[in-house]
Length: 467
Image (cartoon, rainbow, N blue to C red):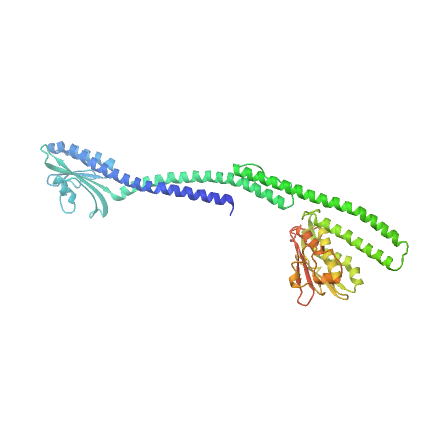
């Protein structure tokens, strides 16, 4: 999961938590307040109707009472009924068919309570309507203050609940809008915070790929800028160090080659004098040691590259590379009585690397196989889809030495018994393939001998003339 996603999730969590912490209590409070306002409105409306209906009852003005209850029922979204002192309906905002009906009975206890002088407001189930009602009743008093009638206001609880839900939904809509705006702002902020890290990741990838001059853009917060500056300083210092190392090795090799060339010329001049006996033997041995020293210098130059590629990559057909390598070492193998053969070349795959690096890696492995396999042995180059195995039936390497012989200047007991060497051959082969994300691994064959496996990443493109 990326840093940008983690930041966005963190911001979203905090935003949702904050909205829930404030919105839920506010929603309950709003619902309670709306319910209280509806109840208060019903009580006040009942009181207003009761006061206004007192004089109309004394005049028995039924028309005015009808207009009064209709006008009072509209704002409360309910039904308003006026009864006389005996409990008979004399005005109904819903219909005129109920006029004269007796409401002071057991099914409407609030009317009886209002006629007794008490104001009542309660929720109850209506038997006639089959639904829950909010009922408010208030007494109508005459000039002496005695109850002369009653006002009854009924409201559907479902309608009250709908009003509460509308307000809660409105609050939820505001919360959703705030959440969307907050997520948008969080996305922009997460992008701004993660962009410098992504720049640093890209720069680090370029450095890992060998571009030591890659620099990360210095932008973002103070910490991001400080990190980018430190990274750029580090890569610049590494680049200077490696360049100085390569320059030193190149200069040292050049300086060494000049006296080595002079020594070789003197040895060849001495050998031209046709010396006999121990002198000729020592001159030949000195020339061999000189060749070995020159070869060691060449190998150190290869290792000084620090894993950097010095040739462009391309698709390489493994079968062709293996066949060419075997042809180069066929004569040397024949001199020692070895049988050198290549198998699987026709069905081999294609890998991505520089052909020159693969050739040099194969030469190092085959040189070891030819040198350390006893006379008359067998060497087999097996080509498969992602690499090449070089198999021999020599004395092999002890299992406890497999991890050591890949180090520089490290040779196993078998190698030391055969004769002098640099201990750099396998190391160089591995270094060359690791430039291309490949590797060289060793294993002991069950039948005896050594298996050296060279692996490289598969080539996903297409080569001209290769199906």
